[in-house]
Image (cartoon, rainbow, N blue to C red; front, side, top):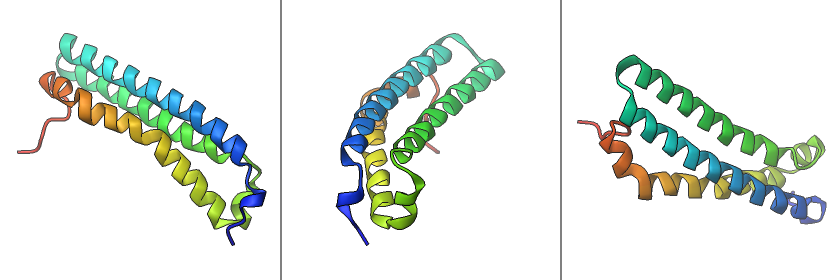
Length: 120
């Protein structure tokens, strides 16, 4: 069952703040890299470097989840679905601002250089 007393909530909060900062920085660097790639390169080089930037961003997002998950020993995760739910919720809260930044503030610029174009 969900037992809050066993959860290292202070440690999760610290890791959330660090994860939020790291993923936000990664998203800013990702957008900056895509804008540079889109403005300066064409063809295969553009596609290859954009894929590399995407893979690095995906690695940063996955690393953030794994780092928050490693807050406590595996016994917490195995003993409590609630703990896993808190970790997943923390990760979602840390990643959401990065996607909001890209989608709300940078999408038009990225589309202007050929990325994230709408279908059809």
